[in-house]
Image (tube, rainbow, N blue to C red; front, side, top):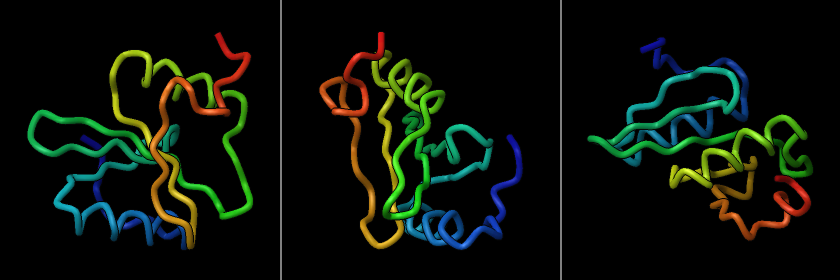
Length: 95
């Protein structure tokens, strides 16, 4: 597993702190920003500024994860974690 050091990016660092405080083991991998583990459970988190959404490629990746039952979240600075489901507006028109 890649290093679980706190990222230097302000938003990602803050999210990392929150996720580790929840008892999750967090690894930085790129896209999505974090893979988080707790026992045998996995969740993925993409960090964004409060006014930004997912890019098209990120939307496609997250939709595949959600469709396979993996818990996916967007974390926005100042807004916290937002869970994604297949019914989320981000996924409209994405197959």
